[in-house]
Each structure stands twice: as C-alpha cells, then as structure tokens.
Length: 492
Image (tube, one colour):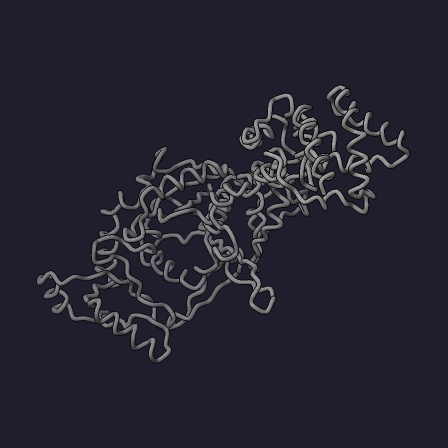
C-alpha cells in the first residue's frame, strides 16, 4: 500500500510552529516511504476565515521547502482540494447515516444549548450535549422538517463500553464511550463540521496516515466510529507530543507551559523576520519531538533531503518537547557557517547595503561575520560603528587587559597617526606598521591597537581587530575619526 498523507490547515492566520511541525512530519512520513503528500485547505469554519491566509499557507510551505504532490493550486485525481468547494458532498453522507440510524436530526435551539452550558458550569460538570433529540419519534422529526425548523445533524456515538485504537506513538488508547459526545456533523448553515469533513475527505482522498497533535487522542474514537459506520478502513494514526515553551514567573522560577506568543515568536514568518533561516527553522522543528537513529543518531544538522532519509516515525517521542530559542539560535549559526560564499553574500548583502559596503570588502566581511553571527540581522549591530562617529564614553580607552589608560592612549594615538598616514592601506601593512610601532616604543602591541581601534570605532566590541576596522572605514574616514578621538582625549 502506497502511503498518502495530507496537511489540512485552516486559513485562519499565520502558520505557527505546531502547525508547521505537523506539516513537516506528514511530509517526511510520505517522502521517506516514497509516498504522496497532499495539501488540502479546510475552510469550512467561515467565521474564522482570514482574507489572504491561504496565500500565507502557500508561501510558508514554499519557503519551508515542503512541496505537495496534490493540492488546490496543482490539482490531482482527488479534488477539489478546498473544502468549501466540496460542500455538496458532505450532507449526503450525513443523511445516509441518519437513514441507517447512526446519526440524527437535532432541533435544539441555541438558547437551550447555552442553558446546558450554564448549568454544567454552575455544577462543575463537563459541558456536553444531553442527547435530547437522539430518540425523537419519527412523527416529531417529520413535523419539524416540514415546518422548516432549523437543525443540525449529530453523530449517534456509542454510549456504553469502551473504544480502543492503536496509535504509532502512544500505543493502544482506550476511551470510555460515555465520555464521547454526540458531535455535530452538519451545521445549521449546511456546512460540515471540521471533524466530519475531515473524515469524509481523508477517506475519499485515500489518506492512509493521519498525523496530528496529541490533543486529538481522546476524540479519535469519534472519528473511528464514523469510519466504522460507513464500513471504511481506519487510517494509521500518528499523534504528536505537545510543544512547550519556557518562561520565568514572578518568583524567578522557570515555568514550562504550552508554547504561545508570551514565550516569543511562534509564527514561521515572525521567526524568518527575526533573522532565522527557513532551512534552520525546519531543521530545528524536525527535532522537536523526534530523534534520529542509526547512522544519523546524535546528529543535529540536517538538510531536507537528509531529514527525508533519516525520518522514522518510531523516533517520535511521547514526551512534550520544549521550544528552546537558544538552541534554534545555535542551529541557525551552524547553517550560516556551512553556507557557500555565494549564499552567505545573498543573505548578508541587504545589511551591507545599509552601510554602503562595497564589493571589495565582501570577502573580508564573510571572514569576519561567518564565525561570529548566529542570525544575519546581527550584522546591523556589528557594523553599527560605521555610522557617524558617536560622542562615546572616553572611559572605553581605559582597559586593564590591554594596560591602556587615558595617558597611554594619547601617547599611542599621537604616535600612530603619522604611521597610518603613510602606510599602504591593507590589513597586512596596517598590522605590521602598528606592531613595529609598538616594538619601537617597547610596549605590547595591544597598547597601540586598543586606543586606535576605540578612537576609530567608538565602541568596545567590533567584528575583527584594529586592522579590519580601519579597512572597513577606509583611510580617510579612519584618520578623521582617530584625530577626533585624540582631541577628545586631550580635552578631558
């Protein structure tokens, strides 16, 4: 049997980490077994529909490197692939279940249902439908239909006994049937509910493996009851553990709870905008609840092709995983280090352009930045010294490790200016000239390099040492800044 998986997002906004991991695992499950990956848009909940959200889904999957074999944009043999375009096919299935006594018309008003919720809330009981319309007489049903009383169609769930099914991650799951409610299949507006359309679509599209969050573990028997009612094969289930986030409470204690915006960015494009590479994000998300084995054991950096080869559903954990932004940062940094010069420049150039960096400095900046940044957005901060020289704190010149003081800085800069005015402007020549100057003054070269770099950059931390800073600024600008620094020091 050829594996067929599907990703079925609702167009309700941005794509968060949990949804993206589900899509990735469904994709990897199919690709690992040379199966088919289907994209289906589940837009039956019209109240939550967000204009433009479908494009967000397409753009996210494209940027994430997840390609589908069938879907609304490319078609396939099982379309349409948008639920609202399949609307007319759902009600006949529900009507079939009504005729067979496996579903029923429910004429309860919103006011009655709300009162049930209020009573349950007051008593502390679980909110659920009381099955008021489950055993209406045929005469009463016919009268309500003739009078055009609004109705929904509900599933006639089993009431007694237990239901057991197998999940690839959690093993055998048993639920008492008394805990299952008679879920709505067709709403009053004629649209199917998410759960019902899900089952119909999965079956008619030949989906063999369903990957979804562990929050569906307890409701899966309702899905299975529908499959059984129609006499259909039940798909293979792969339920994924929760993704948690860390925060610190008012007592300074670390608290772990379900990942949400309070923990940081949880949307794919939010993370991209913060400087994380799409490939790195997907690499990290793949490891949230899954561990590679065999030849890939203990490995943490993967290309998408390598993930496809390594992925095995047996490596999915039951335990919740914690979204660690520091670990994502590390993964992103590793991706940057492994980049080709061409790819590095492609990502870095927009930030270089902010400072008017010319191509003759690209090679130097790659050498300086690659090992030092974990996100390309950090380039802006690291090159901020190239902006107009700030009125910096002169205490920067006082540095114990370099044995630099205000007095030694004045002496060092006074000696360095004429040397730099006459040196050939390249790294080797500048370094050699400053080193020779230090030797002639019988001091460590840091005694010269520290104050010259501070005077030129105006900040303590720069990408590279004094030679690199001076090269990036250029000779004229470097000397102008160094002389300004000397005047400030003299005026203290």
